[in-house]
Amino acid sequence: MPDTGTTPPLGRLFSSFSPENTPADLVVVYLWTVLSALAIYAPLVNETPIRVILALPMVLFFPGYSLIAALFPGRGEIDGLERLALSFGLSIAVVPLIGLVLNYTPFGIRLDPVVTSLVIFTLVMAVSAQVRRAGLPPSERFEVPFRDMWAALRAEFFPSESSKIDRALSVILLIAIVAAVATTLYVVVVPKEGEKFTEFYILGKEGKAADYPTDLRAGQAESIIIGVGNHEYRNVTYFVELHFVDQEFDPATNTSTVLFMEKIASFSVTLMHNTTYQQPHTFTINRTGGNQLKFLLFKDEEPPDSLRGAERINQSYRDLHLWVRVR
Image (cartoon, rainbow, N blue to C red; front, side, top):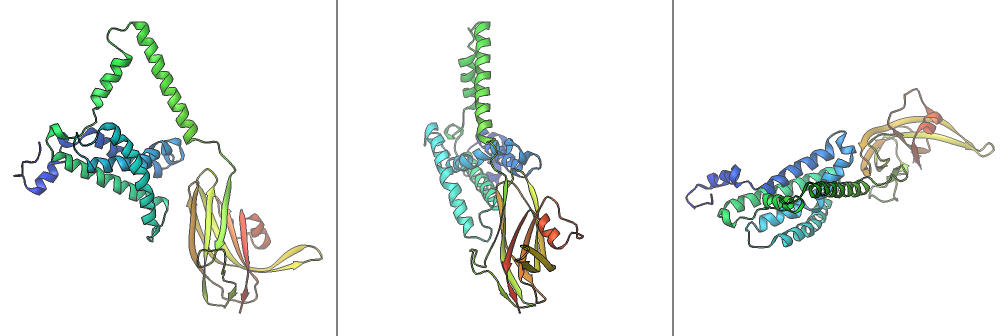
């Protein structure tokens, strides 16, 4: 029932979420939002096309739809076609704006903050829409006529006067349509895998490929940004090690000899496909005599401690180095 003005505010709020005041389209929004978040993070599911199928509407449609639902709770304010078009248009506007705001926060534009922000925005707008609709008379509330749509679809494909042959042909047509849509979705969400590779890079303090810490003092803490990008088409656990190395090159034999190699920092990180880790790391060198900072990247498993020197470097998946002077 609509609010008559005599119900306490808290009571009106709770009554907005009673079964009779919970429209079917907003139930779809709630369920899709929760399921898409689960598909992104749930083990096994997040490695299947289900993740993309659920996440795409969550990015391209539902944020705008929930916003339009909150702005226009009434039936006659805008028609269904306008509501549909604005849902896509506003989603395309809202999602980049959320990314822009996150870019100026400590969270940055990463998967977790983006997903959390989208879920919160969509649910808050949907809840606001439900409260606003509940304040209108039932005859004035907007609702998606799911039952009428189903009845019209059924009458179109299976009219009461149709023969058995017509019904069979209608079933075959529906199966063909569903198969065509499923095939298209599969091609879109499961593209052919390209080259598999991992990015591994280091940056200076300002996040640029410059101003690296190369003139160091023993016992003094320094910082460098380490980046790892996963393009392996699967979840990968990476192990990164930072070593202080004294390496000597013999031009006569064209070989390098590791005189000593000391691990000064290490960490591990698990990344999903097409995601990047980039964070500053602090290290301290407590001795002199070396001439290189060696950055080693290992994939899937950490090598045993018994693997040392040049063998450890050669065993790494990727390696980088900085020429340094330690005083």
